[in-house]
Amino acid sequence: MNINYSKRIFKLIGISLIIPFSFFEINTLNKQIKAEKNLAAASDKDLFLYRQMGASYLCIASKAEVDFSKGLGIASATFANVIIGKHGGVIKELGDKKLDEEKLYNAGTFQIVGSALNICPESIPKNIKNDYEKRLKQLVKQSKK
Image 1: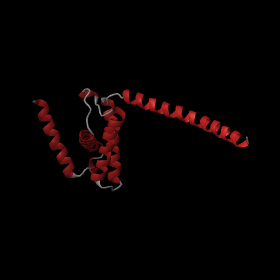
Image 2: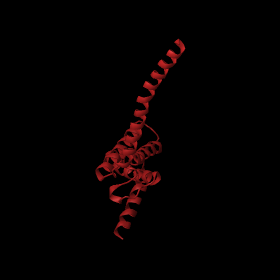
Image 3: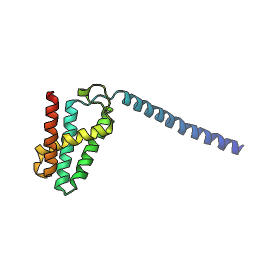
Image 4: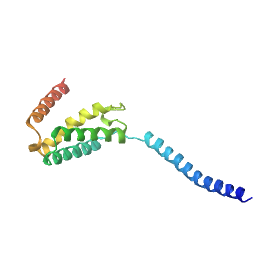
């Protein structure tokens, strides 16, 4: 009888521990699903913030003598990851189209360099500055067509 009594106690304890964890897990899954559905496209204000944060990181990294390419790569990857994670890769100005990580990375690189040229121009290598200005002229030409 003592053995049956112990088994019952273990079952009750087990069930009392499993049920709350099950509800917690279901609740967590529901929150994740709701969060994925309620992603808002990145606004101009959001993009400005992410761009400025990337430029600030790049300036600080350059002054700390971190390799410029590595610093820019990290800043650009963070820019892309935030837009994917928080906004599902969608930018309000471009409509409902989801952008992939590579496109967001490249756009982030260009925008971060542009902002960094305003914040810390002395930290931007000459060749990067020249490439940026060349690309900017191309984009201005294309937008006039």
